[in-house]
Length: 400
Ligand code: CTP
Image (cartoon, rainbow, N blue to C red):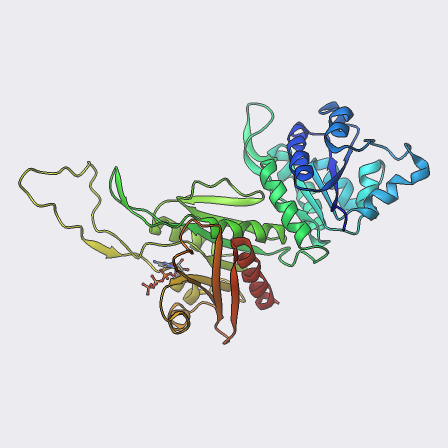
């Protein structure tokens, strides 16, 4: 089998320079990449750069190499088309089926998955015309990555930045791996919690846990690649924001509860992958707790934190919502898993078999997913994203 063929469409925005990094990642990971810039994109990065980095000739319009019918062939042969950056103008053209250059022609002839990574000023992104175009493209099955929030071209900042090229690459990799499968979470809003909460004792100390957040981030990335709008409630992870994901940073269990309850109000699915502290210190010392010579330390009195998973499972803020919990068990996995599923009242419970080689922070995981309907799905030891895909398969089945 030859290398997967990727078309990298580049439209005319300042973020075009970031597409060079995306191109590099794609070629270095074994993809055959054909760059199709628009004429305006060449104002930002020249054809020589695209040609040298991709190893292919570059043209913007349909009148070069006409005998090869490039406006049809490039799209037909592609396994993936990714447009990064996608300007407001490009989204409008794609949504309306205009075909006045090589890239827009390619978008019409491509039958493979298409990913758009928009970048523009906040006002342009939020304009109803752009939002309707994005909705149209998503309805037709394209993956439109939400722009990142941050510094824009000038001194201003807001939503509209092109996400980090490494993260766009991750989305492309996942979309390619799914092949011609439809983005089955398109139009859905999913909420994922990740990481571990920290319960402060004084300004320098906290009670915490070893959760790295990697499983939750894998869930967020895979959901975005399957077309979902993703809200990631991230507790103390220190991981880079995944592309197209709204990240809400939180510290404590109480803050996590507030963020999850708010985001869950209009969510189709909630996946609680975070390790939430069951207890917090009853009092918080505003000054550092000092040791005193000859005196025993004061005991730390703990109080219960809210059980977020049980609370949202009972409240079901939206009808038909699918709620997923996680649990780490060492013994009696099957019996403990079933009991916990009933106690929490969720629809699915992913039970990690915690063992010696399956430690917090590792890249791999092994699990059994219990369904409230009696189903039981084993996920063999493997990458956390494989487990994430299985979780979304089970969620998508239940969402119908
Ligand atoms: N969870 C939660 N709120 C808490 C504690 C846990 O929402 N205060 C969620 C976790 O995000 C996870 C699930 O509940 O999805 C199971 O967590 P786990 O710690 O295994 O369950 P516990 O209720 O703490 O059960 P046990 O003490 O028996 O281990």
